[in-house]
Length: 234
Image 1 (cartoon, helix red, strand yellow):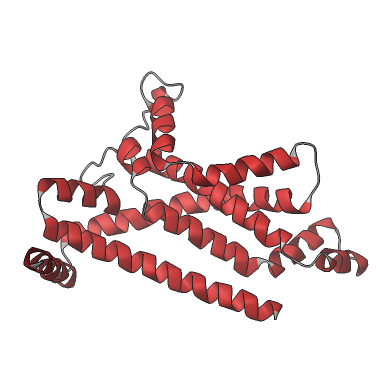
Image 2: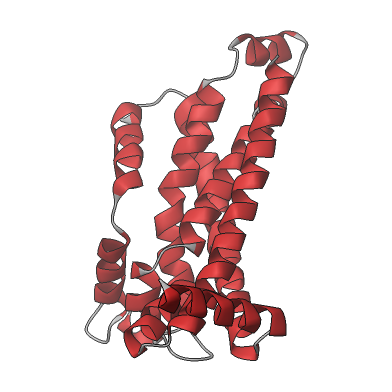
């Protein structure tokens, strides 16, 4: 127990001192997660909306596939990404393996089904009269779409935050596709794994404290958005 407390105290000192490597790893993690969430949202929000608000052949199958991908292990995404990006893979000539771009690509694949599924759930949960009322008042097709998204905006934002939270705390994709290269692809989670294996528990604990602070902040924001969404429906 004494060993644990000593590690925590040293970790807090590193955080308070603004250790350079600590900050570099944290900033890189935030940047990569933000980029991946952005790309995933550009694909996932329209996909989720289409699954919820339109009818087409194969819709149920696609919705089932998206929901099934929610539980896809990150190491599997990393393995598939490695197969595509390695020298022997179809995208090997691009030289993306063990780069920040590879982590962003893997993170996009990871968070895409989360954002799409939660967006679809949010739109499905809307009162069907919202779209009908918009059309009755003379709104065009795209205006009706905008109305639905406006009504579901808190839930959609919550979907983006959930996807971001999954990315900032994942390790499989970053480790396999990024290679955990110091100052280049090392993220909070991969650094924690490395420092723990090296026996530098204080530094690993400092990284863990920062990671938990980020996750806690995201959960606070998520709770606030959900509360505002419930208040609006009420």
